[in-house]
Image (cartoon, rainbow, N blue to C red):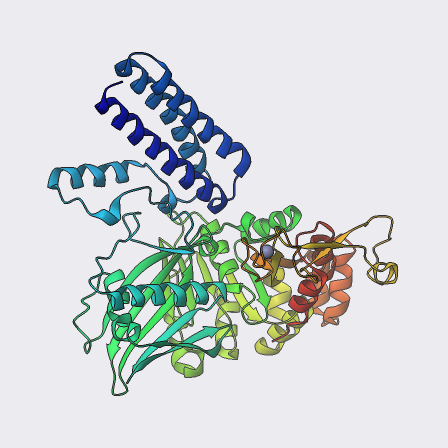
Length: 536
Ligand SMILES: [Zn+2]
């Protein structure tokens, strides 16, 4: 073999090593069968190298080896692309196009070598062209600032913050998260990273980093744990200092269809049937931060938005639904808000949504609208009976409900136990009896780990970073109303009696369905109890 031949084979070996190493990290990142796919890629690499070395004629052996290795690697790339959302795919048309442009413009940047899946990284920022954003960083301080931006956004997303606030102070940056409607202080950003922190965020969002005074608005996407998020960024100079506000929007949850929210099949059927009744009234209820807006949006997206004229009133709009008109209302404005709602309903929409009705005048308008249209109303209430009672109180009479109410939904959000570190245990038989679960049916339940990990296991769970829970789902009680139930409402029967009547036809409540999730090993008893106990 010539010297050139040896160099080519060594280069090939380096590529094989690089791709195998990437695949090793990437299998974990996309959560697929690590052993099997590593074996496929490695076998392709070894077969390829064997062909390059053992076939006597290098001009035949090397191309043959490259083809063998490419076949194995590309089949892995196709497999992993099928597991992830568009922004996380590798070797797509957009990548090849960017590569072609780079080659044409001869602007080879060192940072751009290699696959872009984010393997081994906790967060990646993505542009709206579905490609990772690569900032050109000129100083160590800028690199530190980017690392701090990554840390803060990653931390906020893990803690499910809806907003990140950043205020530049002399010598440091103050960080605050808004979580479940409450403001929490987070760790400060220290200098020198603090000096560049707002500028790095602005560059990520495509804003002018030099403009520190005038308000600017931009967007960028972030991927954490293979889930996409949208970050809406607002910056402005204030008397106190430069301020950055980042709204975090979970793109997967906000696009979910009714079937994906966590309803059991019979519940989805009942809800779809109720939504199909026109005119009719559908009530969605739950405490604060129980996912009501997500369910309301999924209900509105259930309609054909090209045929129907759909409007929705909200206290704030995070996610706009295509072909649905969103209107902001501030119910504290009283008569002003009611007048606005009235004027929009007068435009004869087919479907009206309202995110959380709290004002008698608006409740009356919506009940009135339900004479002609399909009306989907959100309401703060801890269970369906209290939702009925509260709505009756807002309306001053059960009559509109007796005429038009189709269904009452109540919901909570329940987190899934981390599948990697959850711990099995034998439940106490007394507990099972109290929960109406005969011990015959359940041998093992799961809970977050109570023991430190074994010596040979990592101290920090690679899947959940010791958060113990990964992802969440809705837990629903669905109460479809029939003629008898509506008649009970009409004669002001106690809401608890109405619920008892409906439960006879098989409707299951939050406790029963929550325990079902526990038995299936998807969550813990503590988590279900925590969720159900939330009442405001
Ligand atoms: Zn874990």
